[in-house]
Image 1 (cartoon, rainbow, N blue to C red):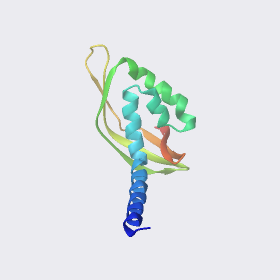
Image 2 (cartoon, rainbow, N blue to C red; image 1 turned 180 degrees about the horizontal axis):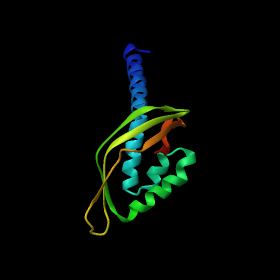
Image 3 (cartoon, helix red, strand yellow; image 1 turned 30 degrees about the horizontal axis):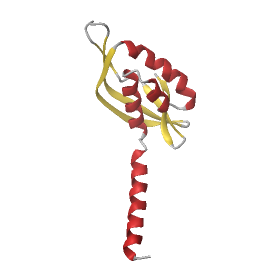
Image 4 (cartoon, helix red, strand yellow; image 1 turned 45 degrees about the vertical axis):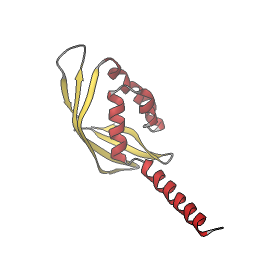
Amino acid sequence: MPRYRRILIIFLFVLFTLSACAENANAPETIEKYLKAKVSGDEDKLVSLSCKSWEAQAILEAAPFQSVNAEIRNIACQETGQDDTYKLVTCDGQLIIQYRGEEPREQSLSGVTYQVIKEDGEWKMCGTKK
């Protein structure tokens, strides 16, 4: 096999390996994605970001946001520790909710600790602690 083919094969292997690693979100990124999907009322995305035991709850969490205008501002999530098999994540930022033309209501995202677990090779939302 010519040398340039071997180099090309090695290069492609390294490229695919690095791209696969980049696709795996870390625990705080998973919670950011989860919260954004929640305020958009995206049940399918919430379920895909949830551990198996949290999937039913994820669907319930999407429902209230399907009839309001909501957005998240200045979100920043960070890993704060570990509890048994879960990584713990907290977030800062504001949830802005507007229902049927009312004045927007602002709610802080702080005060909730999210439990995140690695399931099927990916970080998944799996509960909350207050």
